[in-house]
Image (cartoon, rainbow, N blue to C red; front, side):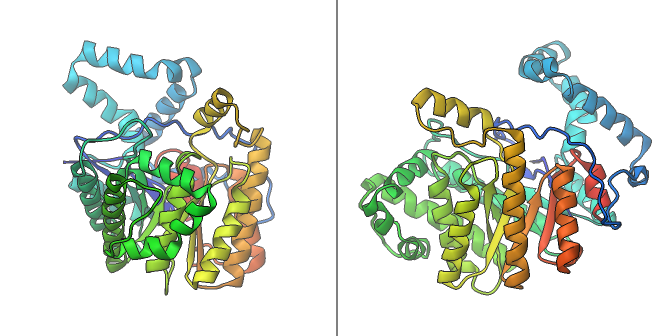
Length: 416
């Protein structure tokens, strides 16, 4: 049985969470809040976010459920007490009744289905509306949460293969989200990140050497112990097998960013995957978190690296999902807070990264693609306006838009 929190793409994207093996649990990381902004006025007549007619596509029950869930999620007290309340109500109601109540409310609002049949029915319904899926296996690991043995990572790799099969249900240009720490220990990612901060580590972990290891060659990395080398080799081969299957199936793989203390390692293996598989099309994408201060600089550096390697480039542009923990760690350990100082600064960072991406898409046609993954209406309107000015078709071009299923349907449906 598969659990699915699906993310959806409208033609160009709406985000859903995807299948997860029943015995696994999704991450408890909390997304950074995206405060609702006032609806912008735009000269772009092709997108009207105030048009209530988009909701004609939903049933009365779906609208009623959406209002109920919105009310529940709008209460700071309920959000803060949610884990305890869920545990208490499960104890009182019993597992079966408790599960039924969740399926009718929160689970039903945000999750595409629990079985292959339910997931496919949801995908077909949304594809009929012009919305396409971006499936994801919502499994990740943080430092200190290491699983025993390679078996856990192997099972996750198989889940991703299953997810890829579900992604190719007829929608054009399917996508899948991937978390590296579902296939490689977060502790190793942290070790590699520390090595990359040293000059020796930069040469030891060159893209060329990582690509060779990914292809099955025996490459030893001097910064790692024998055991770490063995796990790294196996992890790279898992990543490579998922990438290879994705390319065979014609599915783009969007590699997620996670915490700043492991992100450099994640980018290293993602760029290696790009070097191996993005020679003709941007099959492998990297994620950039605009709530971090150095995001635009890193995005430009990685684009330059892709140009040097002669490969295509894909970008998933988000605001960020680990705000509270990043700030807490910076304060505890006494280093500079990596997060933008305010919501407004994050918005400006997102806009600058977005504009850079649009310029790249316009200049290197066919070799650069990007998904504008946001629920922020001002960002969506800005992207659509600039695309109109640049002559980039939002329906068939290199730019996609993504929202979580059930989170921002008025935007997703307006973009169709």
